[in-house]
Image (cartoon, rainbow, N blue to C red):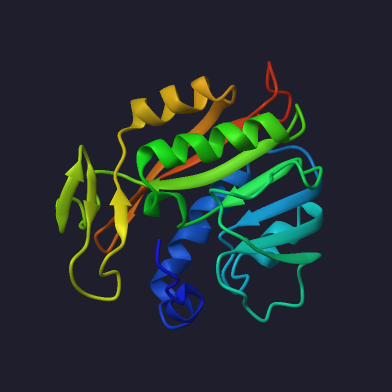
Length: 207
């Protein structure tokens, strides 16, 4: 995965705000305040205000070191090698990161998160669906995985997902899928997911 400055990219693309709106819809299902949140692939902190509203502490992790002083701690690390047990997280959030990894790598990341976080933790994330306009572009590496050969994402891998395979992966990682939304705008199409380590989940606001 290359170190593209996605923080600068998001600064110039207001249309990406629709992703945050999808997360607000996901967050309506929660009825809990958290103690420690990890913003995985945080960039410059575009979701920090939203996350701070439901978590006492928010930590940022990114492969690029951004000048973001508002996190409890900014961790410069690769999501594939980070020790998720280093801090006692009960909430993991990730937007726009996991689809840049192979499906095997995504499984390994989520499985490692599951092993390290609290039993009642929550994981909110998104993955690109096969309805996204980028699906099928670039060099096909394996099933539903492509490496782009031009543009700002040249050399980057993108994986695209079906609903059922996400649920199966989450189950194998000992999470329980609580809510999934499929949202699309201007050609972008993603699955937005809320998973919990609670069995049964006690965090859901049914109202």
